[in-house]
Image 1 (cartoon, one colour):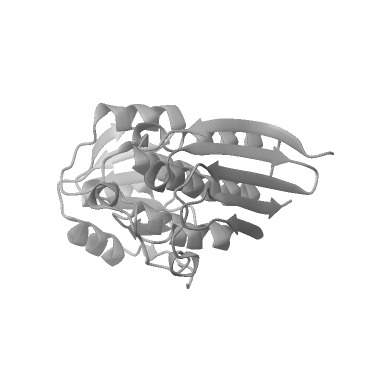
Image 2: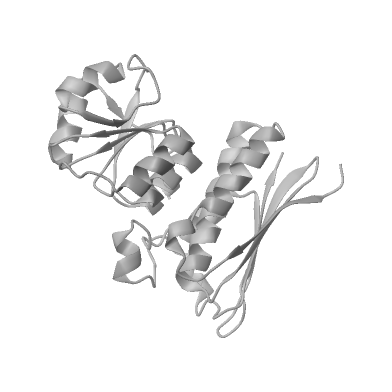
Length: 140
Length: 118
């Protein structure tokens, strides 16, 4: 099966109320497509982290999900402001989130680490003042 | 242990009931940090938390958690309960604090889940 776009959702900055809707839709789609639950669980956790990252840290962005016979690929692209120090951001426990975000149970500094842990493959393109684009893949 | 045994132990009040009370619970996780639940939770477990916002339900949905107990008598907002009904996640509330809830469950033979190392 050729790679096919199955989901495309805009994510607004600060839209906590709708945080998780995109990942939830993806989970439902993957269930209908008969994707094994362990693979679906991994990619939806990754998507949820990507979604919350856009809401918490970016000016807004978009998430796209693709499926083929070999893999599920999720692309999260935002319009900035970019990750200042990627090496630090990847360390478990490091976070730049504010108290409001922490009160909601996020900003514990596990987001990018989680994305790496649950994906088979991750590509992060970012830089200070630049858009961020993260491509995460789980192989089927 | 069966969820039915946990109800009197933690004096649970049902908020959203989806599954039968004889549902078998093997492990539990007490956590207010949803990022950590996403990071460390590896099994279909029971979540005890003091957080009551809809993100708790989202976290449960993504990690396949079916039972949530809100500790310290914290009643979630209607929005949280509505999302739980929609996603088929059981919600209960205990008047007891987190430490006591976890202690009672551990004493009753419930195991802590195996968390991944970072």
